[in-house]
Image 1 (cartoon, rainbow, N blue to C red):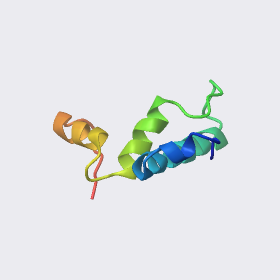
Image 2 (image 1 turned 30 degrees about the horizontal axis):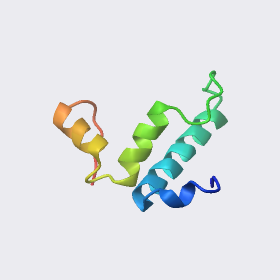
Image 3 (image 1 turned 90 degrees about the vertical axis):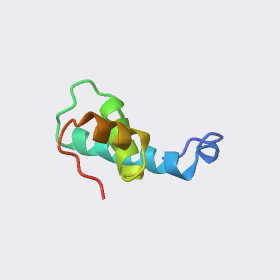
Image 4 (image 1 turned 45 degrees about the vertical axis):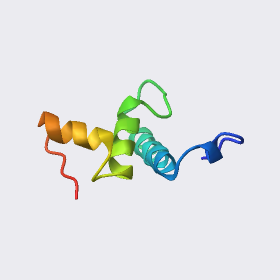
Length: 74
């Protein structure tokens, strides 16, 4: 997953999040549950951010503080 000229501009954390997001989209598409045909959607990006930095991501902190779901980190 490399876009010439742009990939090197991202931080390591951002690269990890995008790679996780691409993996999530690939899994969703392989199961045939994506009718929209999008490669990566907002949910994939959210999960990618959570998985790239499970202990200190902004998305993880938001989830912990809102008390939503049963997502466990660490």
